[in-house]
Length: 406
Image (tube, rainbow, N blue to C red):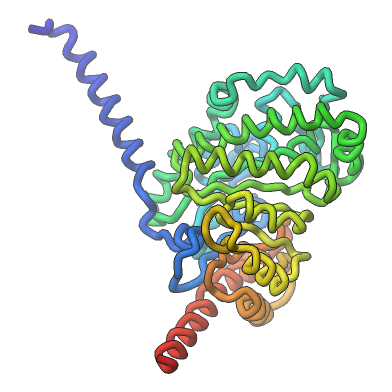
């Protein structure tokens, strides 16, 4: 017989276990509204799903007001899981998007490796202690990448269950996208690269320190795999890998250094989470799309420079070699500049053109680059609504034509 003094402790333990089970249960449940997941898997959909790169953040008046109300800047908001959840939810209350994406930053991984990141206004992203050479690369310890992520990025991971709970509470049960930057994009900033100056720093490293570059990209890949895997464990339904700095690496160096690591990341994540779709975006490096299809990604993104018809035909012709057994789902590539000026009617016309070139199936409508903050929310809403309405109309016409032909 247990003493009465142990009963409160047992009761607390039971409550804690029940709470843990409840959280696990919520995270394990597939979202009720799974349109985007089905498109990512290449299944036929009743309409084209849509979400937006940088859909949360500075283009929204409510985001700017929230920063004022909390007296926090962007980086400070990222430190609090409740702030992250609130900002993640803001665009969902305004737009009928088909997914939420974790509100975070691509450079949290370098920060976890003791790289100092600053974002002074007007100067882009600055790393104040860039790695100087091979000796600094050798010092980076990723011998226990999972523990590193759990210890140094616990605040990011804690935000995912908060977001999942918010999605349920607000009856917006749509997929949650987790993400990371790709290895070269992280390396570019870690060696002192900047989009406004030092634009060639990554290329200089490939020329001067090829072995150290390969070592650094490999170490970053190990962290990325565990970081993205843990996001799935915390509730992410899909994963997006961003090669945001693809225009700052030459095609030969991309193929020599980076591509094998992107393939490795896809292979390892598929082994860990075979049912979780993997999306990839090589912005400014669209020559890599064929190789990315061969690497096993489920979704490949086109940037604003890509020729839609050419990419569709090329990837369709090469689909027989794709590990997923089909042509990749395409994502993109609406020009966000069309959301800065114009009218809902001009946006609708551009959407119609885009959907006619892509086709409404095996497509996730998105942008060809992220929202910059200058966009008009009225036009953003017009884009989201036009994707749904126009694709439904196209699918209905196709079904009618198929019935008539039969």
